[in-house]
Length: 638
Image 1 (cartoon, rainbow, N blue to C red):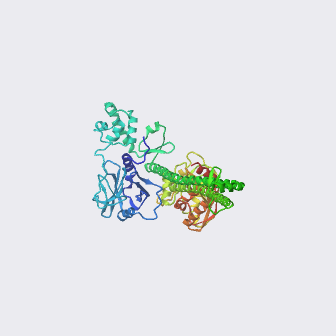
Image 2: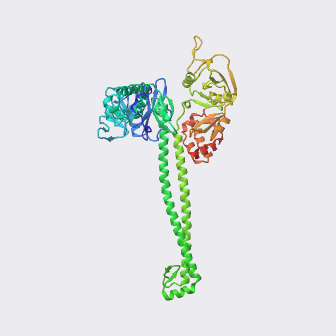
Image 3: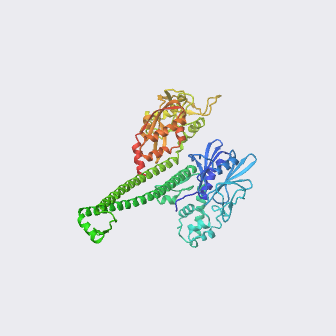
């Protein structure tokens, strides 16, 4: 099985059923296009804002970390905004039995179709209700269709039967392949990973000739096609990897598991997002590596030429010095030779002395040439040294740019959409950024034995400390309390500290006493409350290396300093959050000396820093963290 680089028809069907259909009723708030990627901010009914990303010929899924908005609006994005910004998604489906996604949209009385082709050489385009093309990311003519404005949209050719459900003609279709696996792929039009999995589960050797299949084996293959297809619609995607992600699929890959691959599973969008992000980083780094290689080759060629030139100058300088020294040492004999023969024979060389020039003057001329070539030799050596420095600068610059790309493409963990901290003993604490998230955090993640925390002020995050069967220390409680304290209204009020109460999850309820009402994001607390007193409103904010990429962490200053490459300490102040973020990014980059670490810091999205600053703030301290050396070693090993 080859490494997977794009979604199959099965992947698309599974994604539509388990994620795409959830977009029905959503409103398209904005649209962007850059470097072949189309992404849209959509407001889902009752589920907040999401970002749908689509890459023709490759993928479509929701993402929690979209690309940065381009500085200039791309004409394709501008065209889409003109027609469908503010429109509602009324249906999500495929066009035919192939990898072509169709979003049907309504804006007032108008109807549109946004189409993303995941087939090779696919395009993204918008049509009106009559399938007339309004805009496309690429206009071109192909042998079987034309993608142009005002032309009728013709989809790519697709099978005229359902590959997963129409199995009556399987016996004949499978004969189109030299072996059974190619018969399933070419004849039945099944995705390659699906076909191999089906044969593995059916116990049929994939290299077997189709005509050699028994009726029992054919029945088994049909049974497994149905089985794997039904499994693929259940809403779990699987990620297979060894050192790098190798494949993803909506069914359990028992074949790859048997071949020694590690298998993770998760929600379709998370798996797809993680896989293609990793692939994107690899491709970017490979592209950069190629660029580095070409530039290095150019400099190395120049260095080789300079070395040869230096050797040539050195040799000429030495030769002229030897000739001059030899003639000067035996001036009388060579004068007699010149009178008799009209030439000088010195060290196997025949020299002609210019007319009107004495031998003494000629010797001085030879010494002068020797010195001249010696100077050229030294200049060539300096040029060689400069080329060597240029080579080092190029490598340094490229590594820095690679690090910036790695930082920009970092994929966030699920909990990073909330306020979050990993305490010093490894407990995860998450808190809501607003009333809706407070509801979400408590309803989705608070279990009876977990801990619920809240600052003793109105307007603070509801924080859930996940215990997972362990007991937290006093330090863990203070770490988690830092989140609800620092992101509370007390920060805006400029207070020095605040108390935080905590209870068990079982003590938290949304059910009010009879006749009372509980506001959104608020909860009923029953029973005794425990307290963590005097939590200082001093927030550590720093940059840690996580899976080779930088991410911004917060918490008590002593904890953040131990985990960070660089960090700062913030207090309530007068500077706007974005100005503080801009200042922090510059100061952090200036504090580290290693170019790759600088690149990692410069690649951090400014919004990620802004998101972690509680409000108007002042910077009390900026310093190198305890993990700077770890970061240097990690960068050196890449």
